Amino acid sequence: MKPSINSKLAIIGVAIDLGAGTPGVSLGPAAIRFAGVTERLSNIGYQVEDMGDIVAIKPVSPHTDGTNLKNLDEVARVNNLLCEKVSTAMSANLFPLVLGGDHSIAIGTIAGVLQHKSNLGVIWFDAHGDINTDETSPSGNIHGMPVAVSLGLGHDRLTSIGGTDKKLNTKNIVFIGCRDLDAGERKILKELGITVFTMHEIDRLGMTEVMTRAIEIASNGTDGIHVSFDLDSMDPVFVQGTGTRVPGGLTYRESHLALEMIAQTEKVVSAEFVEVNPIIDHKNETAKTAVALIGSLMGEWLI
Image 1: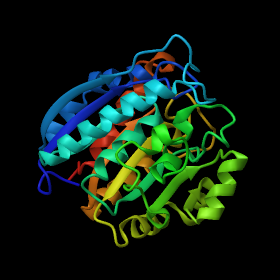
Image 2: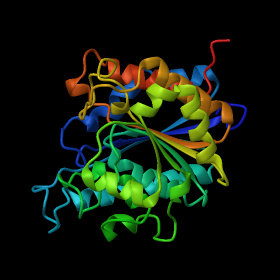
Image 3: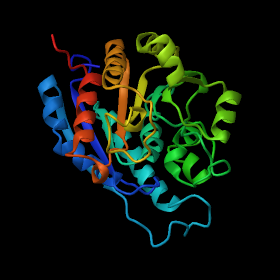
Image 4: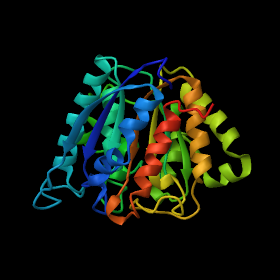
């Protein structure tokens, strides 16, 4: 991605932490803005329109909806609004850049993009699988479910967002950086044949080879690539301000190289950066890292 492909970009914040187990990521969009994301994108050459934040309202109880899913009603409401906002941005020929917030927001982002790109490839950077359902989730936290929902699996309050006929194809989804999968996730990933490049593959093959393969999978027969970047895909040494840290993740440079390689394909149509938690961060460093990574994805070159 670079301004010559689409010079107009929309920032959409989603101030929600109700899908996560640790509070604080609702402040992520503000932290990323404070770290200078608009200025960074403007310097690259984008015309940036900030569409503001969708703000979640914390319910009295996380289980008022009668399911084991925490805060289902509010997470569904927020993602329905996000789906509409992303679709509106794309209708106006704006590249949607969504700032989280917990990773449950990918439900609404992807649903909104699918209104315009029916054959969407996805490159998903995450320490976790995010492919649980209400039947397999050990926690009931919806931020561990967005991939399943985007495939049409899970509670109908979530799978109906954007339309049950607009879903991803398993053959065009790629995970990068996984190192903490629940038993149910390992089972469903194998059954569906989804490509997962764990840290083992990254160590053995190197990031350049992993991304070459990932880009081929996500772009094969698709009409664009969506990038979903969870900051916990990186090693906690580089990102203190994220809630579900797992040792042994991506390095700072591996992350930049991966996003730079995706940018060079000129096939990126949407992106989200999630799970920045300034409450547990140090001097907003994780948000600053997110801004730098956004720059790499959006075509910021040194020379």
